[in-house]
Length: 144
Image (cartoon, rainbow, N blue to C red):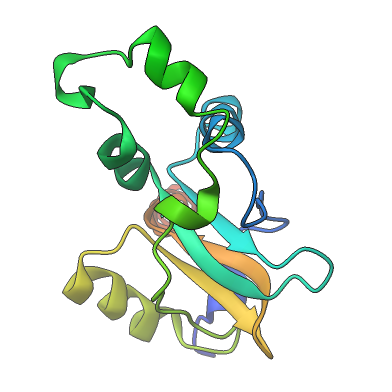
């Protein structure tokens, strides 16, 4: 039996934003696609620059603990650039990394996702949901 690799589980294509994208666009992208992590890539090259998570967005919002952002915050989100909010130091994996190694990275570091790169360029995304989907598929079809 061959080892399960990241390439077998990763999601692609991946929704991305550029470093100067307004935070408002990131929020809309997350809501529209039901995602919690958006990679930030260099426009034109696709090189991974960072990652913006739902938590990063919440931390950037004034009064986020009290509920919905104020009208003032919503307007400010038009001017806040992704590069000011994103996490720049992001752990990544390769498509040929074993799924077991990637799962251990997710678990041991408390990550929700791992960007998949090749020569620094983003080629996919591996999330906790990808592992859950695989488990459901495997348990639903015992012969797989």
